[in-house]
Amino acid sequence: MKINHLNQYGVNPYQKAVNKADTSMKPSQLADKVEISSKAKELQQLSSVEVERQAKIDEIKKQIENGTYQVNVNETAKGVLDFYSKN
Image (cartoon, rainbow, N blue to C red; front, side, top):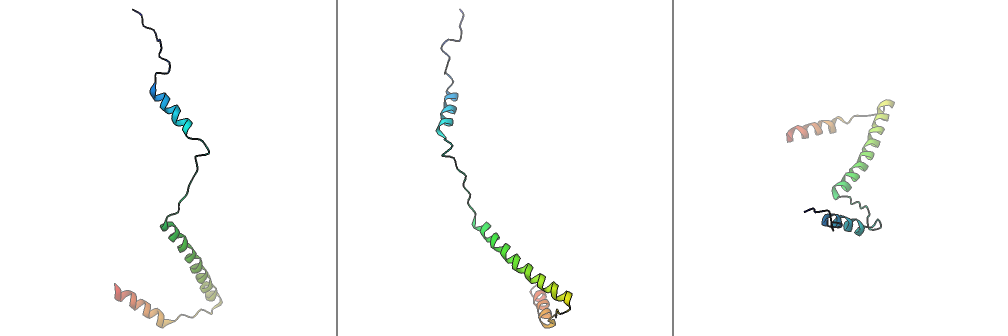
């Protein structure tokens, strides 16, 4: 008895499922979406603090180059004492 491939067209159920999934998703339904977390927003705000800090550093450098920078020894000593008294 010889059995040929009769009536086997369209028997693969997995292929039908794949084809159905491809047709259900239209390009107009696909879209990218970006959400920024609260942590990322916080980090962005910190970067603005860096800009202000850099401006202050540049001002101090300019004063040092001009010879007009004056160190407040009392504030420096107080800062050192506070730092080491905590540790």
